[in-house]
Length: 213
Ligand SMILES: Cc1cc2nc3c(=O)[nH]c(=O)nc-3n(C[C@H](O)[C@H](O)[C@H](O)COP(=O)(O)O)c2cc1C
Image 1 (tube, rainbow, N blue to C red):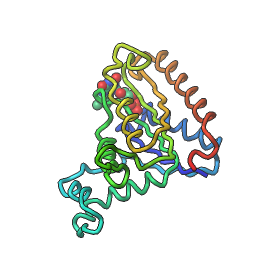
Image 2: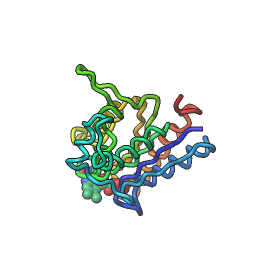
Image 3: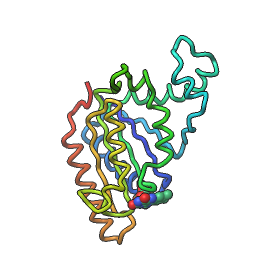
């Protein structure tokens, strides 16, 4: 049995391609792994606050010196990191907003990327502290041309950023399933969604029965 943590980030709760693809991914996954558990963290239904001055002070204060205000300011970070740690598989649904990720997702990232908890630094280099997990990321782009060497490849700050960030945390096994041109004509959208659905089927079929040791 594996635990899946699903993270939704599109402000659209209806008609969202990234959410729809993620629904399809989870449904396909549960067909193959019916005993797996799915936890859902919807960053739009329950937005994560931006980190504050006191949150950052808490991040850099040794555990034995944390006072009550610092503990309170980092309690949400503790909870979100616990949730992440307890998952074997991370499934993210992400729209491209202004060439990057939604701010709802960035707010979550700022709570979970934390020295001594999800990464360490020994004076020479960084080590991710979340090994043994895998991630699947479903990205929706309104325009086309970002992927496969397309003319806007240099403007895609979603996929390269998330790949780097997840790798930084020690999550090396990351699969991206993308749908481009979601604002194009219906025939193009339909063809692109069909392509993405086939990639979902292939990714789930290729996943090992137990995703993490
Ligand atoms: C605020 C906002 C900014 C957007 N910026 C871009 C962009 O920079 N490039 C792009 O190709 N599409 C952009 N789009 C279009 C979305 O990426 C597209 O509608 C996608 O399908 C959104 O994901 P969703 O369907 O899961 O909601 C933007 C949409 C919104 C609402």
